[in-house]
Amino acid sequence: MKPTIKKLMIPLLVLAFTLETAIAEETSRGKSPAFTSAAQTVLSGAPVDLQMTNLEPHARVNITAERVFYGKLYRSTATFKAAAGGSLNLASAEPISAPWTGVDRRGLFWSMTRTDEEPPEGWDWQEVYLSADLDADGSADASTMITLALGSDDLEEIALGSDFPGAFFLRPTGAQPLPAVVVLGGSEGGDSAARVIAPKLASREYCVVGRPYYSPGYYGRKRQFPTLPPAFHNIAIDQLELLRDWLHQRDDVIADRIGVFGVSKGTELALAGASLIDGFAAIVAYVPSDVIWEGWGPGTTEGQSSCFSWRGEPLPFVPCVGMREEIAKLIKGEPARIRTPQDAGRAAYPDRIPAARIRVEEIDEPIFIVGGDADDIWDSGGMARNILAKRDECGLTTVAIIDPEAGHGLSGDGYSPTDAAEARVQGHAFPAMLAFLKRRLKP
Image (cartoon, rainbow, N blue to C red):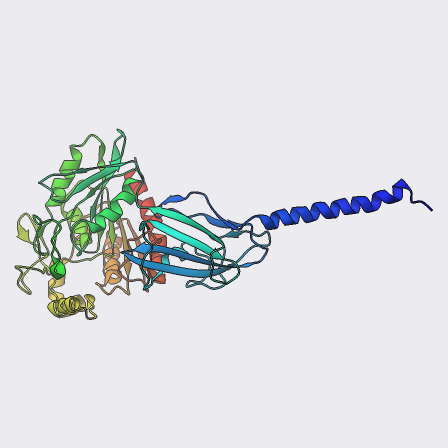
């Protein structure tokens, strides 16, 4: 009996549907796994939105991140599991295996550790290279590069001139007046800290002055700015007054919106300056000191030199006990703990602390402080608490982030190689600091 047309149509429709499904599945499988990002260039400190698509559902993915940092190759690796739909969002996915726990969109960036390998030629230190291994054979099945730009492309810079050796003024191009921030680095001297911090702030619509205030020649290195003091000895706090006046003369600066940003030893200058000089609207103090300390360097006498002066007179200071010995260890390449002689000095000279204490109660403007109890350079956590307690006693506004596990390197933005505690604080403190400056300085 010959089959009817109706009976033939059913198997033909089933065959067509099966073929269509197979073609669709094959097309999906034919798409290569790929990284996708909202932007290939991200301002350092801004969230990085990175995803993978075209993965097998629930597939295990090993992701490696690499970058050049201080001339060395750094690397991190973590394993993730793709979602049922074959995608992986690195901003919200919890890794199966990683140097960190929980969800951390910055994890691949801060957890990088130094390798012994030579960095590839042509890699810029702002570039992060990411690769994905889908079959655990060590090969890269997908790759991408993200640029963590220190600053935007539209910044213009001028030198301040001989009155402020080494100082620079950085701002976005354009004629509109902006708030200003003075950036003061730490005991490393020179302008290295300001060169990292200033572009991040200027790219967020601030005028920024990077102000080196001394220039040492540690370990036989050439001094960066020979006309600046070679020793941390009687550094003039008055220079902040001169900088304030210089900024007031500029048409592109909002005169009543000037902040000061200090890191480490720069917080002594920032806090002491704000307690003595009017005209600053906000103070940021990363890993701060609550006192003026003993000075050091060429031409100083142990136990007799102050780090800072005011109106030509040395300020009262807390002596250190055993600092020369710790410095000698550093020079020899031996383990050293700079905090030890400072803790010993506070214990040996409690009578010197009241006179050396920075009068933070004289600073009417809000202060933002960040400190860590595991700080081996000095007790920034304890000193931050002292600052907070005094200001709370006086009813003054202070924003404080103090972590019991964090060390000294807290002024970063959370995307550079560091340890878990410091990365945690950086990731919290950096956006909080930007919000603090915005509230205080943006009209």
